[in-house]
Image 1 (cartoon, protein in one colour):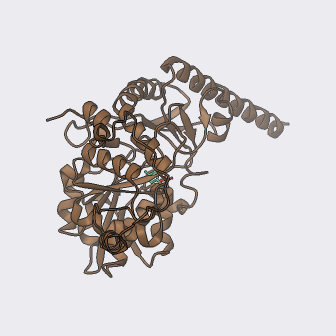
Image 2 (image 1 turned 180 degrees about the vertical axis):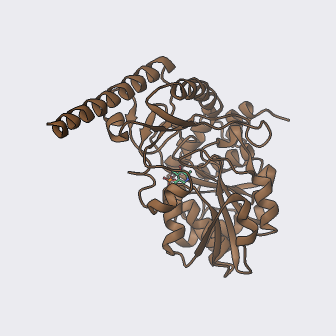
Length: 396
Ligand SMILES: *Cc1c(COP(=O)(O)O)cnc(C)c1O
Protein backbone atom coordinates (compact mmCIF):
# COMPACT_ATOMS: atom_id res chain seq x y z
CA UNK A 1 0.00 0.00 0.00
CA UNK A 2 1.19 3.51 -0.78
CA UNK A 3 2.38 5.41 2.28
CA UNK A 4 0.74 8.65 3.40
CA UNK A 5 3.61 10.99 2.35
CA UNK A 6 3.47 9.56 -1.16
CA UNK A 7 -0.31 9.76 -1.35
CA UNK A 8 -0.13 13.40 -0.21
CA UNK A 9 2.13 14.23 -3.17
CA UNK A 10 0.51 12.11 -5.88
CA UNK A 11 -3.20 12.03 -4.98
CA UNK A 12 -5.70 13.52 -7.44
CA UNK A 13 -3.16 13.69 -10.28
CA UNK A 14 -4.24 10.67 -12.31
CA UNK A 15 -5.35 12.65 -15.37
CA UNK A 16 -2.32 14.98 -15.59
CA UNK A 17 -0.15 12.67 -17.72
CA UNK A 18 -2.94 12.36 -20.26
CA UNK A 19 -3.36 16.14 -20.26
CA UNK A 20 0.41 16.48 -20.75
CA UNK A 21 0.83 18.89 -17.83
CA UNK A 22 2.77 18.82 -14.57
CA UNK A 23 0.74 21.19 -12.40
CA UNK A 24 -3.04 20.67 -12.15
CA UNK A 25 -4.81 23.16 -14.45
CA UNK A 26 -7.01 25.78 -12.77
CA UNK A 27 -10.28 25.58 -14.67
CA UNK A 28 -12.11 28.87 -14.16
CA UNK A 29 -14.97 28.20 -16.60
CA UNK A 30 -18.39 29.03 -15.25
CA UNK A 31 -20.09 27.26 -18.13
CA UNK A 32 -19.16 24.42 -20.49
CA UNK A 33 -20.30 24.22 -24.13
CA UNK A 34 -22.75 21.38 -24.72
CA UNK A 35 -23.20 21.14 -28.52
CA UNK A 36 -25.43 18.13 -28.01
CA UNK A 37 -28.01 19.66 -25.70
CA UNK A 38 -29.75 16.35 -25.07
CA UNK A 39 -26.44 14.83 -23.87
CA UNK A 40 -25.81 17.98 -21.80
CA UNK A 41 -29.23 17.49 -20.26
CA UNK A 42 -28.37 13.96 -19.27
CA UNK A 43 -25.19 15.23 -17.60
CA UNK A 44 -27.13 17.91 -15.74
CA UNK A 45 -29.57 15.28 -14.54
CA UNK A 46 -26.76 13.05 -13.33
CA UNK A 47 -25.20 15.89 -11.28
CA UNK A 48 -28.60 16.81 -9.85
CA UNK A 49 -28.94 13.21 -8.71
CA UNK A 50 -25.60 13.53 -6.87
CA UNK A 51 -23.39 11.65 -9.35
CA UNK A 52 -19.60 11.68 -8.93
CA UNK A 53 -18.99 12.18 -12.66
CA UNK A 54 -20.80 12.95 -15.91
CA UNK A 55 -19.93 13.63 -19.58
CA UNK A 56 -19.69 17.43 -19.02
CA UNK A 57 -19.59 19.68 -15.94
CA UNK A 58 -22.33 21.72 -17.75
CA UNK A 59 -22.13 24.55 -15.22
CA UNK A 60 -19.55 25.39 -12.54
CA UNK A 61 -22.03 25.10 -9.66
CA UNK A 62 -22.55 21.44 -10.61
CA UNK A 63 -18.93 20.36 -10.88
CA UNK A 64 -15.40 21.68 -11.31
CA UNK A 65 -12.44 19.48 -12.39
CA UNK A 66 -9.82 21.40 -10.35
CA UNK A 67 -11.94 21.02 -7.20
CA UNK A 68 -12.60 17.38 -8.11
CA UNK A 69 -8.86 16.58 -8.05
CA UNK A 70 -8.53 18.01 -4.55
CA UNK A 71 -11.52 15.94 -3.41
CA UNK A 72 -10.05 12.77 -4.86
CA UNK A 73 -6.72 13.41 -3.09
CA UNK A 74 -8.37 14.18 0.26
CA UNK A 75 -10.60 11.09 0.08
CA UNK A 76 -7.50 8.97 -0.50
CA UNK A 77 -5.77 10.48 2.55
CA UNK A 78 -8.83 9.85 4.73
CA UNK A 79 -9.36 6.34 3.35
CA UNK A 80 -12.90 7.05 2.15
CA UNK A 81 -14.58 6.47 -1.21
CA UNK A 82 -15.38 10.12 -1.76
CA UNK A 83 -15.00 13.68 -0.54
CA UNK A 84 -17.19 16.71 -1.19
CA UNK A 85 -15.78 20.20 -0.74
CA UNK A 86 -17.43 23.49 0.14
CA UNK A 87 -16.67 27.20 0.26
CA UNK A 88 -15.70 27.06 3.96
CA UNK A 89 -15.64 24.70 6.92
CA UNK A 90 -18.93 26.14 8.13
CA UNK A 91 -20.51 25.57 4.70
CA UNK A 92 -19.38 21.94 5.04
CA UNK A 93 -20.92 21.62 8.53
CA UNK A 94 -24.13 23.17 7.17
CA UNK A 95 -24.23 20.72 4.26
CA UNK A 96 -23.81 17.72 6.60
CA UNK A 97 -26.68 19.00 8.78
CA UNK A 98 -28.83 19.52 5.69
CA UNK A 99 -28.06 16.05 4.32
CA UNK A 100 -28.28 14.15 7.62
CA UNK A 101 -31.06 16.07 9.39
CA UNK A 102 -33.07 18.26 7.01
CA UNK A 103 -33.29 15.89 4.01
CA UNK A 104 -34.17 12.95 6.29
CA UNK A 105 -36.59 14.87 8.57
CA UNK A 106 -34.54 13.85 11.60
CA UNK A 107 -33.89 17.30 13.04
CA UNK A 108 -32.36 16.26 16.36
CA UNK A 109 -28.59 16.47 16.85
CA UNK A 110 -26.51 15.11 19.72
CA UNK A 111 -23.26 17.04 20.11
CA UNK A 112 -20.29 16.66 22.43
CA UNK A 113 -18.73 19.91 23.68
CA UNK A 114 -16.36 21.55 23.25
CA UNK A 115 -16.77 22.22 19.57
CA UNK A 116 -15.47 24.97 17.33
CA UNK A 117 -17.44 28.09 18.38
CA UNK A 118 -19.04 28.50 14.94
CA UNK A 119 -20.31 24.91 14.92
CA UNK A 120 -21.56 25.27 18.49
CA UNK A 121 -23.38 28.49 17.61
CA UNK A 122 -24.89 27.03 14.42
CA UNK A 123 -26.20 24.02 16.38
CA UNK A 124 -27.64 26.08 19.23
CA UNK A 125 -29.09 28.79 16.96
CA UNK A 126 -31.70 26.45 15.47
CA UNK A 127 -31.02 28.16 12.13
CA UNK A 128 -31.46 25.03 10.01
CA UNK A 129 -34.41 23.78 12.03
CA UNK A 130 -32.19 21.46 14.02
CA UNK A 131 -32.56 20.93 17.76
CA UNK A 132 -29.39 20.08 19.67
CA UNK A 133 -28.80 18.13 22.85
CA UNK A 134 -25.31 18.59 24.27
CA UNK A 135 -24.01 15.43 25.88
CA UNK A 136 -20.77 14.16 27.34
CA UNK A 137 -18.88 11.58 25.26
CA UNK A 138 -20.20 8.85 27.59
CA UNK A 139 -23.75 10.17 27.48
CA UNK A 140 -24.31 10.04 23.71
CA UNK A 141 -26.42 6.88 23.87
CA UNK A 142 -28.87 8.30 26.42
CA UNK A 143 -29.23 11.53 24.45
CA UNK A 144 -30.25 9.81 21.22
CA UNK A 145 -33.95 9.76 20.33
CA UNK A 146 -36.08 8.49 17.44
CA UNK A 147 -35.60 11.72 15.44
CA UNK A 148 -31.82 12.02 15.97
CA UNK A 149 -30.21 12.49 12.56
CA UNK A 150 -26.62 13.20 13.53
CA UNK A 151 -24.03 12.95 16.29
CA UNK A 152 -21.33 15.63 16.22
CA UNK A 153 -17.91 15.36 17.86
CA UNK A 154 -14.49 16.98 17.52
CA UNK A 155 -11.29 15.25 18.53
CA UNK A 156 -8.87 16.78 19.39
CA UNK A 157 -11.48 19.41 20.18
CA UNK A 158 -11.27 23.12 19.53
CA UNK A 159 -10.05 24.88 21.64
CA UNK A 160 -8.98 22.73 24.63
CA UNK A 161 -7.72 19.57 22.82
CA UNK A 162 -10.15 17.23 24.60
CA UNK A 163 -10.02 13.75 23.08
CA UNK A 164 -13.02 11.59 22.22
CA UNK A 165 -12.93 7.82 21.62
CA UNK A 166 -14.52 7.74 18.16
CA UNK A 167 -15.31 4.00 18.10
CA UNK A 168 -17.00 4.27 21.49
CA UNK A 169 -19.22 7.16 20.28
CA UNK A 170 -20.03 5.24 17.08
CA UNK A 171 -21.11 2.22 19.17
CA UNK A 172 -23.38 4.43 21.29
CA UNK A 173 -24.82 6.09 18.17
CA UNK A 174 -26.17 2.69 17.10
CA UNK A 175 -26.58 3.47 13.43
CA UNK A 176 -27.15 7.22 13.71
CA UNK A 177 -24.54 8.92 11.47
CA UNK A 178 -21.55 10.36 13.35
CA UNK A 179 -19.69 13.42 12.09
CA UNK A 180 -16.12 13.83 13.36
CA UNK A 181 -14.42 17.18 12.84
CA UNK A 182 -10.83 16.17 12.05
CA UNK A 183 -9.52 19.70 11.45
CA UNK A 184 -7.02 19.65 14.36
CA UNK A 185 -5.54 16.19 13.74
CA UNK A 186 -5.51 16.34 9.92
CA UNK A 187 -5.59 13.05 7.95
CA UNK A 188 -1.88 12.71 8.74
CA UNK A 189 -2.51 11.97 12.42
CA UNK A 190 -6.02 10.53 12.48
CA UNK A 191 -8.50 8.88 10.10
CA UNK A 192 -11.90 8.86 11.85
CA UNK A 193 -13.58 6.79 9.11
CA UNK A 194 -11.42 3.82 10.13
CA UNK A 195 -13.14 3.96 13.54
CA UNK A 196 -16.65 4.13 12.11
CA UNK A 197 -17.19 7.87 11.62
CA UNK A 198 -19.78 8.48 8.89
CA UNK A 199 -18.66 11.97 7.92
CA UNK A 200 -15.07 13.23 8.38
CA UNK A 201 -15.04 17.01 8.25
CA UNK A 202 -12.20 19.46 7.73
CA UNK A 203 -11.99 23.19 7.73
CA UNK A 204 -9.53 23.25 4.82
CA UNK A 205 -8.84 26.85 5.76
CA UNK A 206 -6.54 25.50 8.48
CA UNK A 207 -3.88 22.79 7.96
CA UNK A 208 -4.93 21.54 4.51
CA UNK A 209 -4.34 24.93 2.87
CA UNK A 210 -1.66 25.57 5.44
CA UNK A 211 -0.60 29.08 4.43
CA UNK A 212 -3.48 31.23 5.67
CA UNK A 213 -4.58 32.20 2.17
CA UNK A 214 -7.48 29.95 1.24
CA UNK A 215 -10.94 29.24 2.71
CA UNK A 216 -12.60 25.91 2.16
CA UNK A 217 -14.25 22.95 3.80
CA UNK A 218 -14.44 19.29 2.89
CA UNK A 219 -16.33 16.20 4.00
CA UNK A 220 -14.88 12.72 3.41
CA UNK A 221 -17.42 9.88 3.42
CA UNK A 222 -18.81 6.87 1.58
CA UNK A 223 -19.99 7.45 -2.01
CA UNK A 224 -23.56 6.62 -0.89
CA UNK A 225 -23.48 9.68 1.41
CA UNK A 226 -21.48 11.93 -0.93
CA UNK A 227 -24.42 12.04 -3.38
CA UNK A 228 -26.78 13.91 -1.03
CA UNK A 229 -23.93 16.28 -0.05
CA UNK A 230 -23.34 17.10 -3.73
CA UNK A 231 -27.08 17.66 -4.17
CA UNK A 232 -27.07 20.09 -1.24
CA UNK A 233 -24.04 21.86 -2.69
CA UNK A 234 -25.69 22.27 -6.08
CA UNK A 235 -28.92 23.58 -4.56
CA UNK A 236 -27.41 25.92 -1.98
CA UNK A 237 -24.46 27.01 -4.12
CA UNK A 238 -21.95 26.46 -1.31
CA UNK A 239 -19.20 25.63 -3.82
CA UNK A 240 -15.45 25.86 -3.34
CA UNK A 241 -13.85 28.25 -5.85
CA UNK A 242 -11.48 26.48 -8.31
CA UNK A 243 -8.56 28.61 -7.12
CA UNK A 244 -9.35 27.43 -3.58
CA UNK A 245 -9.48 23.86 -4.84
CA UNK A 246 -6.08 24.32 -6.46
CA UNK A 247 -4.50 25.80 -3.32
CA UNK A 248 -5.97 23.13 -1.04
CA UNK A 249 -4.73 20.41 -3.40
CA UNK A 250 -1.27 21.97 -3.45
CA UNK A 251 -1.32 22.25 0.33
CA UNK A 252 -1.83 18.49 0.69
CA UNK A 253 1.56 17.73 -0.86
CA UNK A 254 3.44 19.32 2.06
CA UNK A 255 0.88 18.48 4.75
CA UNK A 256 2.81 15.52 6.24
CA UNK A 257 6.02 17.56 6.47
CA UNK A 258 4.32 20.64 7.90
CA UNK A 259 2.43 18.63 10.51
CA UNK A 260 5.53 16.71 11.52
CA UNK A 261 7.72 19.82 11.87
CA UNK A 262 5.11 21.88 13.74
CA UNK A 263 4.29 18.93 16.00
CA UNK A 264 7.94 18.56 16.99
CA UNK A 265 8.10 22.22 18.04
CA UNK A 266 4.71 21.98 19.78
CA UNK A 267 5.90 19.09 21.97
CA UNK A 268 8.87 21.18 23.12
CA UNK A 269 6.74 24.25 23.73
CA UNK A 270 4.05 22.30 25.62
CA UNK A 271 6.72 21.00 27.99
CA UNK A 272 8.32 24.41 28.52
CA UNK A 273 4.94 26.04 29.08
CA UNK A 274 4.03 23.40 31.68
CA UNK A 275 7.16 24.37 33.65
CA UNK A 276 6.54 28.12 33.42
CA UNK A 277 5.43 29.74 36.70
CA UNK A 278 2.96 32.03 34.90
CA UNK A 279 1.12 29.02 33.44
CA UNK A 280 -1.65 27.31 35.40
CA UNK A 281 -2.00 24.24 33.15
CA UNK A 282 -1.31 23.02 29.63
CA UNK A 283 -3.54 20.93 27.36
CA UNK A 284 -1.59 18.95 24.79
CA UNK A 285 -2.93 15.62 23.49
CA UNK A 286 -1.36 12.32 24.46
CA UNK A 287 -1.68 10.14 21.35
CA UNK A 288 -2.75 6.52 21.83
CA UNK A 289 -0.98 5.47 18.64
CA UNK A 290 -4.14 3.77 17.42
CA UNK A 291 -6.84 6.40 16.87
CA UNK A 292 -4.52 9.40 17.25
CA UNK A 293 -1.04 8.84 15.83
CA UNK A 294 0.56 12.07 17.04
CA UNK A 295 -0.07 14.97 19.41
CA UNK A 296 -0.35 17.56 16.67
CA UNK A 297 0.66 21.19 16.75
CA UNK A 298 -2.16 22.78 18.74
CA UNK A 299 -1.62 23.71 22.39
CA UNK A 300 -3.99 25.28 24.89
CA UNK A 301 -2.81 26.74 28.17
CA UNK A 302 -4.33 28.65 31.05
CA UNK A 303 -2.28 31.53 32.42
CA UNK A 304 -2.23 33.25 35.76
CA UNK A 305 -1.75 36.59 34.05
CA UNK A 306 -4.51 38.36 32.11
CA UNK A 307 -4.62 36.62 28.68
CA UNK A 308 -5.14 40.01 26.99
CA UNK A 309 -1.86 41.23 28.50
CA UNK A 310 0.00 38.10 27.40
CA UNK A 311 -1.15 38.42 23.79
CA UNK A 312 -0.44 42.15 23.75
CA UNK A 313 3.13 41.47 24.82
CA UNK A 314 3.94 39.18 21.87
CA UNK A 315 6.15 40.44 19.04
CA UNK A 316 6.66 37.43 16.78
CA UNK A 317 3.59 35.23 17.24
CA UNK A 318 0.58 36.40 15.23
CA UNK A 319 -2.35 37.38 17.45
CA UNK A 320 -5.17 36.00 15.31
CA UNK A 321 -7.91 33.42 15.09
CA UNK A 322 -7.56 30.48 12.69
CA UNK A 323 -4.82 27.88 12.86
CA UNK A 324 -2.67 25.52 10.86
CA UNK A 325 -0.70 28.20 9.05
CA UNK A 326 3.07 28.45 8.54
CA UNK A 327 3.29 31.13 11.23
CA UNK A 328 2.47 30.58 14.89
CA UNK A 329 -0.93 31.98 15.84
CA UNK A 330 -2.40 32.70 19.26
CA UNK A 331 -5.91 33.61 20.28
CA UNK A 332 -8.10 33.95 23.35
CA UNK A 333 -11.09 31.59 22.84
CA UNK A 334 -13.38 33.25 25.41
CA UNK A 335 -12.91 36.59 23.63
CA UNK A 336 -12.94 35.39 20.02
CA UNK A 337 -13.52 31.87 18.60
CA UNK A 338 -15.78 30.74 21.46
CA UNK A 339 -17.29 34.11 22.36
CA UNK A 340 -20.75 33.05 21.16
CA UNK A 341 -20.79 29.89 23.30
CA UNK A 342 -22.70 30.71 26.52
CA UNK A 343 -20.06 31.31 29.22
CA UNK A 344 -21.53 28.73 31.63
CA UNK A 345 -21.44 26.04 28.93
CA UNK A 346 -17.94 27.11 27.97
CA UNK A 347 -16.63 26.78 31.53
CA UNK A 348 -18.47 23.47 32.03
CA UNK A 349 -16.82 21.85 29.04
CA UNK A 350 -13.31 22.83 30.15
CA UNK A 351 -12.72 26.15 28.43
CA UNK A 352 -11.96 28.65 31.23
CA UNK A 353 -11.74 32.35 30.46
CA UNK A 354 -7.98 32.41 31.06
CA UNK A 355 -7.30 29.81 28.35
CA UNK A 356 -5.15 30.72 25.34
CA UNK A 357 -4.94 28.61 22.17
CA UNK A 358 -1.71 28.36 20.21
CA UNK A 359 -1.30 26.99 16.69
CA UNK A 360 2.40 26.23 16.44
CA UNK A 361 3.93 27.17 13.10
CA UNK A 362 7.18 26.52 11.29
CA UNK A 363 9.43 29.17 12.86
CA UNK A 364 12.43 28.00 14.89
CA UNK A 365 11.10 26.63 18.16
CA UNK A 366 13.43 28.79 20.28
CA UNK A 367 12.21 31.98 18.63
CA UNK A 368 8.60 31.00 19.37
CA UNK A 369 9.56 30.17 22.95
CA UNK A 370 11.51 33.41 23.50
CA UNK A 371 8.44 35.37 22.44
CA UNK A 372 6.02 33.38 24.63
CA UNK A 373 8.34 33.36 27.62
CA UNK A 374 8.94 37.10 27.52
CA UNK A 375 5.25 37.91 27.07
CA UNK A 376 4.31 35.63 29.97
CA UNK A 377 6.93 37.16 32.26
CA UNK A 378 6.04 40.72 31.26
CA UNK A 379 2.33 40.14 31.71
CA UNK A 380 2.90 38.63 35.13
CA UNK A 381 5.12 41.55 36.00
CA UNK A 382 2.48 44.02 34.88
CA UNK A 383 -0.12 42.18 36.92
CA UNK A 384 2.09 41.96 39.99
CA UNK A 385 3.09 45.60 39.86
CA UNK A 386 -0.50 46.65 39.35
CA UNK A 387 -1.48 44.60 42.38
CA UNK A 388 1.27 46.24 44.45
CA UNK A 389 0.14 49.71 43.48
CA UNK A 390 -3.44 48.78 44.39
CA UNK A 391 -2.22 47.51 47.77
CA UNK A 392 -0.50 50.86 48.29
CA UNK A 393 -3.65 52.75 47.44
CA UNK A 394 -5.62 50.65 49.92
CA UNK A 395 -2.93 50.94 52.58
CA UNK A 396 -2.92 54.68 52.44
C1 LIG B 1 -12.23 26.87 11.73
C2 LIG B 1 -12.96 25.64 12.08
C3 LIG B 1 -14.19 25.34 11.48
C4 LIG B 1 -14.88 26.28 10.52
O1 LIG B 1 -14.16 26.40 9.33
P1 LIG B 1 -14.19 27.72 8.40
O2 LIG B 1 -13.33 27.32 7.26
O3 LIG B 1 -13.66 28.85 9.22
O4 LIG B 1 -15.62 27.95 8.02
C5 LIG B 1 -14.79 24.14 11.83
N1 LIG B 1 -14.22 23.30 12.72
C6 LIG B 1 -13.05 23.56 13.31
C7 LIG B 1 -12.46 22.60 14.28
C8 LIG B 1 -12.37 24.75 13.01
O5 LIG B 1 -11.22 25.01 13.63
